[in-house]
Each structure stands twice: as structure tokens, then as C-alpha cells.
Image (cartoon, rainbow, N blue to C red; front, side, top):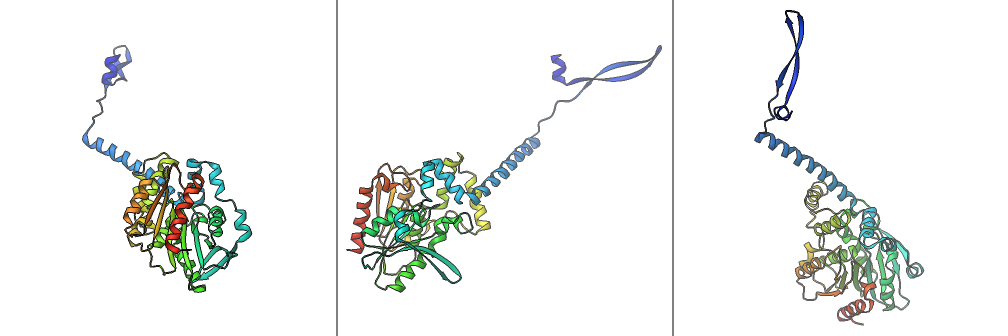
Length: 346
């Protein structure tokens, strides 16, 4: 039986006209063993690779179109820091609700909205605050209250990253450079002597960092970037690993090609790192030591790439992404207030 299995023996029936009439006889039928050739191996490997590439490509497109959407961002934040922190991003702060009013303006057929808070004390100093992804201007209350108590007027733009998944918000901080420049221009047109500080957290931090790479008026005195990422290329890696438990290769590479073809955007160029050497204003990079979303090494690279002599970097021990102030508020504000005092004065 084993011998038959080895030689693939089966039987066929054949009618035979014998002396006593037709009879049926069984004859063994042998089938040759399948031949494994080099060509067949190559075709098999090619088929497996092709199916894998197609599957990875579909996933890469899905990730690219949803990774930075409101739902995608919420899933990521919930995965890394829990539902409570994710929900806090959409809450309206009581201080901002009572003090602020929304400004909605148009320029060159584009709409710009921002929460405006005028300080009770007459002041020529302003802070433009940029919120993190998935948040709103009303989620910046803790930061806004501190600057308000120092005597600053406040403008908190509604960034495109607050509006969900569209072609603009797909590329995060790069999408809002024009937004912040509009509000800088708005302030200086209404007050030529205005002193302006740019402040942002997470995506907002990357936004003000990218704005710092532009030619800015003398009115802009300094920039503060909290938990600023380096580029979208670098941001893909922790997202895929933490939210989907996937290696960045080859998904990130396919996504980069997809973005280049569809949006004419290079993921390695989309982000503050590409403009860091153009910064000509004092800038403070604040970062958390335990940041999982943007590892501290990315911030170190960004700091080193920025060659402006007025740059500074401060790290809050054991702090997670965009949670520096909650980890050590005293140290956080001491760093920031000292930096402001050095660059804007009283």
C-alpha cells in the first residue's frame, strides 16, 4: 500500500473479450510525480509577492486616507493613552467659552476662523495658540488661561486638522501654515506695534514650527513648539506599530508613493524638519521623555537641524506626548515663562 502511494498507483477497468464472454480486468495505472522546476518555483514566488503587494497597497491607501482623520486620530490616541484623554480633546473649556468670541474672516476666497480673547488689561502682546490634532480651539483652555493671566491677548485658530479627513487635513501641520500667517497679518494690520508669540501643542507645535520657517515680520518675537513631530514619514512608524501592530515596511513606502502620485506630497518633506534650517526666530522645543507618538530622538534631530542660535530645548521627565503640563506644570511654565521673558520682555 505504501509502495502504491509512493508511485501514485491507481487502477483502471478494461473490458476483455474472453473465451467465456466479456470480462472486466483491473490494470495498474501509474502517474508520474509532479516535477518541481525552477520556472514553477519562480512563478509561485512571484504570485505570492504580487498578492502580498496588492494586499499591502490596499492597506496603505486605507491608512493614508484614514490615519489622520478624526476617527483615525481618536483610535490612535485611545490605543496609546486611553479613552478619557481622547474625549478630553473635544471638551469645551469654561474659561474660553466665557471669555472668547469666534472670528470668521475671508481672504482670497478662503475662510479663516479663530477664537479671539481680548485681555481685560490693555495689551499689545499676543499669543497665537495652535491646538493638537482632533481637538478644537476650545480645548486649549489650560494654556490660554496661563497666557491670559500674564496679560496676553489670545487668538486660537480653528485648524484644518480639527475638521476631519479631507485633502487639507491629510498632511497635518503643513496644511495650516497659511492659516497662522493669516492671523499674524490680521494682528499686525490692527496693531503695528504688536508683539506676537506662536505657541502650539503636538500638531499645533509642528504647525508653528513650520510657520517659523517662513519670512516673518519683526512683530513675531518667539515660537514655542510642544511635542512637535519631525515629518509625516517619521510619524507613520509609531502609528502603525502602536495602533495596528504592523511594521512600517512596506506600508509606509507604498503610502509615500501613493501620496506622491495623488497629492504631489513627499512624506519625508511634509513636516517641520524640511524647514528647520530656515528658522530665524528664537524657538523653544518642549518635549516629553516618555513620548511614544513622537520619540524624543525625533525632537533631538529637529533641534539639531535648526541652526538658529536662539533655539532652546527642554525635556519634561517621564512626560508623555502632549501631556507635559499635566506631568509637571511648575517646571513646564518656568521654562516657557523664562523663554518669553528673554525674548519679549515684560
